Length: 122
Image 1 (cartoon, one colour):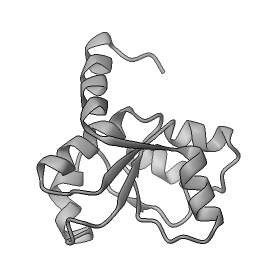
Image 2 (cartoon, rainbow, N blue to C red):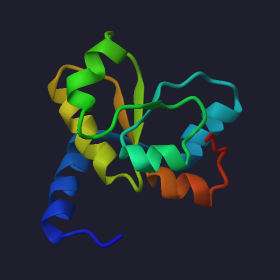
Image 3 (tube, rainbow, N blue to C red):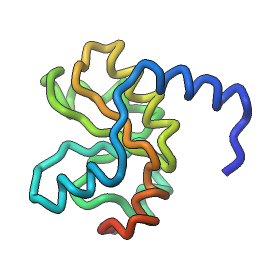
Image 4 (cartoon, helix red, strand yellow):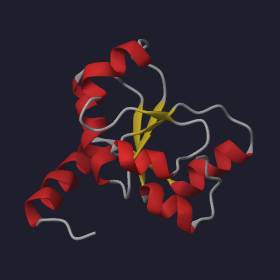
């Protein structure tokens, strides 16, 4: 996907302010049986095509509005993912501003997950 330079600049600034994890770490933890709170911030049509098993869906456009109902405990570990790791970084930054203290953005996102042959749920 071709992103505008200003969008990429905004994302890089967000990435400087958030914690990132990667596909290898998340996949490894899931393979060990850890119960992770994964939130997919992609659009509804992307979510409908497939997702990481057990993930919840709170699209980038509504996550700030709905996160407190879905995850009331602000110290919960939350791993966000999107298509490639940009929108999840923006969402992680927003959640941190809302007081969530253990939020991670998964670098590589859904495309990286598929490339690593991660399990898919439809």
